[in-house]
Length: 162
Image 1: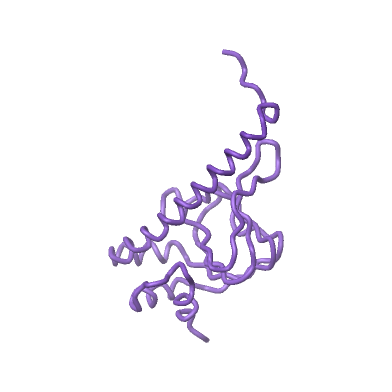
Image 2 (image 1 turned 120 degrees about the vertical axis):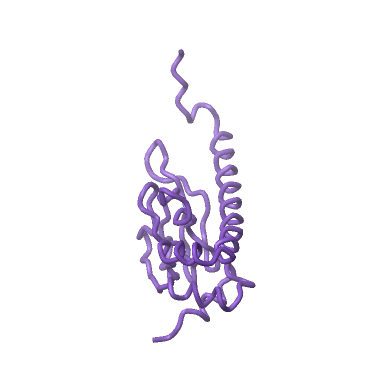
C-alpha cells in the first residue's frame, strides 16, 4: 500500500505544513471517487469528513426556496471542501455535487479532531487554514446573494403585511 503523505504534501491547502503534521494527517486520509452528479455532501447532514480535490469539478450550493440548488462556487483540483467537521454540531452547511468525475482525498473529521486536541499547534494551524476557506466561501455567498437581489423584486415574494 502506498502512503498518501506525498499526495497531501502536494496539495496547495497543506503548503508549508511541517513533516510531523503531514504524517499525523496521513493517518486520517483515504482516496475517494465521485461520479458526475453524485453528492459529496448535503446541507444539514452529518459532516464527518472534508475533501481535498485532486481532479475534477464540484459545485457548492444552497437549496433554493423555489426548488433546485443555487450554485455559490464551482471548485476544482487544488480546492478544499468542508469545514463543518470542525464545529459542533458537525453538519454540512452547503450541498456539494460532482460536476465531473472527482478524485479526492477524504480526511476523517473525528480522527482529525482527536489529533488536534492532542496537538494544539496542529489544531491552530488547521483552524487558520480553514478560516481562510470560510472567509472565501462567505464572500462568494455574499456575491451570489447580491446577484440574486439585483434580479429584481418581482423574482421574490412580497412580505406579508404585519
